[in-house]
Amino acid sequence: QVHLVESGGGLVKTGGSLTLSCAASGSLFAINTMGWYRQAPGKQRELVATITNGGDINYSDSVKGRFTISRDGAKNTVYLQMNSLKPEDTAVYYCQRSEPYGMGSYDSWGQGTQVTVSS
Image (cartoon, one colour):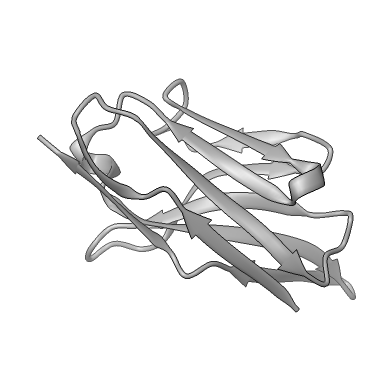
């Protein structure tokens, strides 16, 4: 079982920065993808960014050039550096870890951390 603990959310003004962290523990598989998703009130959860254990990165178009995802393999931790924040970035941010399982994958989720950007 995988346990994910997020930290770093908070309240920031437009144009400000925040860094989110997510530490994974438990029974971890070397091959994995970790990432961040977000869900704003009344909206579906959406992808923000993902990074594989090999360092392949994917960003949503809405955050490209403003957010940077990175990971520390030794610490099993993924980070999301968020710059030039906008009010539309306000959401609960969830950490996710995906590992191979049978013919598919098994996804684990963190509890979420609130990010609020004031105008």
